[in-house]
Length: 101
Image (cartoon, rainbow, N blue to C red; front, top):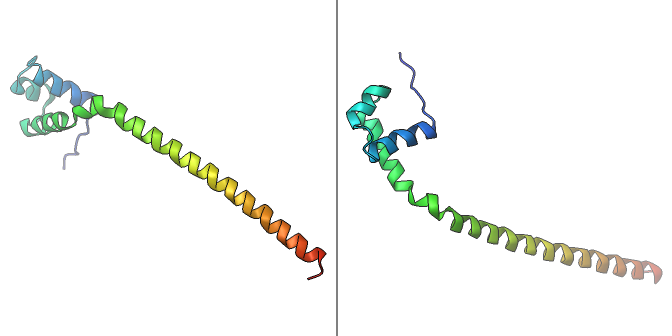
């Protein structure tokens, strides 16, 4: 039973670019790399579906960075509130013990 071959993303990109730029025909690519045309067509369609994310990644990255900054501010605020609550709790328990209650 033959094992399934795996290909790197770089290899797939090069094959698809060769096909899109018409540097090689589908038949040449398939013969050269011993690939079925269905595989190359699938790689091409995946490439074309995701190509716009290459340049749109900066906006997504900035959104993630903004979200991280917002969450860090929230954590800081909650930490301060917790410290205040701890101090208030310590003060109230120390007053109770001093008054003998």
